[in-house]
Image (cartoon, rainbow, N blue to C red; front, side, top):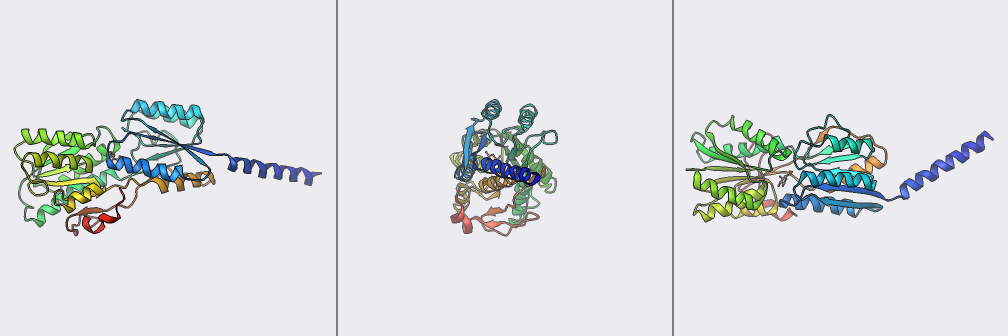
Length: 330
Ligand code: GYE
């Protein structure tokens, strides 16, 4: 009798396991908007990898750059009873309440790209994104080292920092890295620091207004490539030569920036990969097969790309953008 009960129990367990596996897994992603080439590539990568995964249903929400839309989307995901939530946070504060609601419903949460500032107060399965402070540090270090190769290491140069969306992890981290690195290059003097909101149009408009109000800008540190590309248009319109009269360092390493570097209009870009699709899939597969999560924030290995290669920014040496442009898919 005992044996029979055990057998029936084992059969039931096997059956329920099959049912769970046969059920579709609904994965919902709250994206912040479509402000840049980086963002488009990020949306495409996650959409493709999760969306094409067998047995998974993919739901996506574009918050059009509004945190309130993201919060609404997250609450909708809860109501819909999705199985996994993937989130990137437009700004870093203001998430604790809604993320605790997700925790209360026991919906596994995967944090990507821009993190919330309440990570120590909530539960999540995994977190991965760019090392923004390091990216910002590399931007300034690249410019400082490049100036030395031009024999301008002692010359006082004016630096403008074009920041990303105010209050976003990417802006906060890159600004921290930018400013910290400037201490190592006393010849670099900060003359402007303002947000271009990570878009080409705002980068162009901000550069236009800087060129009117500031006597001389020698170096532009743009916290993403889109703003750098917008600024290039403004610099050309003002009759200056981008990449020569003004040294331009972007961030992201999108193909359009590689092209601008090849064309001699931009000098360098610091890599921040948007291709999170494979990592998100791997993470969900681990989750479904019972692998325990980790609260450690993971950063991918990333490079630095410029006109000629060979600039050592401390920890990494730059690669010539022209040598790798054909491999860039975004
Ligand atoms: O650098 C920028 C985008 O959060 C890392 O957001 C991301 C940033 C990226 O709009 O281009």
